[in-house]
Image (cartoon, rainbow, N blue to C red):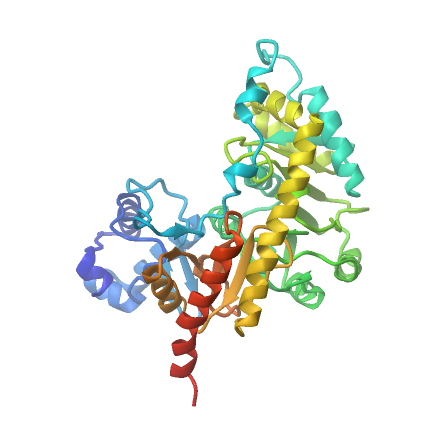
Length: 443
């Protein structure tokens, strides 16, 4: 069934066409990933010229609502920046949901206890935006990992910090080097800001230096790098790869480098930062995966000018991140028992990841997961693999939202709650689902 049979797109001008498609996305009539008709077909259906329709689609691309790619046409973005009236599809009863990227709740510290132990009435107007005790603990953590933290601020999560950094340095139409496959929410944010994605290939050791050089040669003014626990592949920069990337970056001292260390102490690998000695840079240390997703907080370190610009933009909006949250994080970071719990979580996640990888490898299924909470499994057919595994009681994430052109189909498995027996059963189900797909594509 075509998209026009499901929802009748309409509009008497480019502006009305834009508004109509945006409304359809917000109402759930047009779904993320859904393909739109070609320019000529849509023009004929709505009674406008192809030039007018092309202008409307260009505006929707600028806003990040639609994505156009060679040989894939134009489709609704996987995470369009429009509030939607409909929630996510429910997980079937009895199915294991390994699609969300969430940490294991059993391995998170007790937030209630941390909040109950807070003293004082919180921050008042005119006081410092960053709690001094939290700043001290953050500097200690970051500097221990080789990240300079003379200038830092607190933001409402890593993406909030990156959005403010990018808006402070770049303009719509600027190009940004990103990992491919990479973090879907970052792709959506960049598109919403009107920035152009320059894809850089990734292997188990992280972003490829040759690919980064090509992206910079194509005009990239910034690069976003995940040093460990890369989402979705689990890649982690090795010391050798980090040195290769630094050699490329050293030739471009004005390039803005953004580093996303979203897993911190539970990543399961050493941090090899690319920020040392940079003129323009920012690095986040988020607490969502190690302390809890509802703690919408990350520490953002960077060069003094970048941090000053971010703080200035905060003052124009929310002003600061709640000192109640900051106090809770400070209390958790300063608790030796929480540090031991994070170390335990790191070891558990590493064992669960290794178990699934070993089980898949034993059955001849190729997969990636050098660190972090996810395993990336290349497949011949994403839709077939996801559907086949759903029939066997597994909800896995299709790779499409994480892939840019040049990256083959795959599925993402979040291993955070996957015990040994379940890992072995999932591996067997995956092998069975992929076997007929492979036969169907053999000569």
